[in-house]
Length: 320
Ligand code: ASP
Image (cartoon, rainbow, N blue to C red; front, side, top):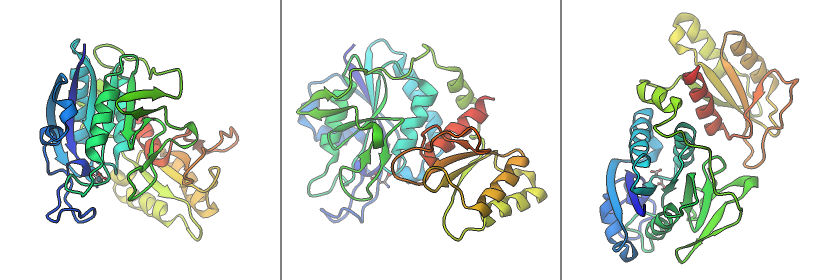
């Protein structure tokens, strides 16, 4: 039961620059995952299996790759000889992929996403340590669910968010905090519960719906800000009067503060709601959640950030 599978998808961890030490002018998703692993001596005597699922910059993540990844992860999770999985991924949309896999697969074993903020050609790349830490977390027999490992910290898929554009400790779990840290290969837990959501052997109904869909139902995100007039939402409504395909099935508003929305944008969103568009309020605040308010006609995001609320709504719509 000690075998771990490493799935490569690209990202800065697999990035290469023509000029050694250039942390900005590089191309993501260039180096194969087995070549990244070959640079980490501690991995050489472990039972590891490698699969290059794709090689992309995660800013370009798309439903097709999410589907393929979900299928490959489900395949390996169902194997008795596999203890856990590691997925190398770009940092830009890592929290979305982590949340997607958690929702769709409900894994009963560790699925550990890891990444880097510096390309493999950096003077001091952060990828090798992150990958080694992730492999160690994937070997935790009492851990289940999707987690993210970066800069020595372990974050749950539901809470993790990229909070820094450049620093190597780019991720945070907001008020929930990280669940563990990794110190010299040892995982030190901050909480007693290491169980994620329950896994239905053989895949969940949602997984089957995802695998047979061509696309997720369209859900867009709009931001509430000073001096808005809701014009973007009204333009969508006007376009959909000509061609119904322009009408999104859902809209998430990245609202101000505790879910407050500029009155003109709110009026446009209420109009969209009357046209059958599902509208969810999240917050553009870096921390905290929208406190549920039964009197508000626009539902809150149950603590999810705008990008995760978008995914949750799209998956809900898919399964209806
Ligand atoms: N653009 C890169 C990606 O998300 C950034 C990174 O990995 O840090 O693939």
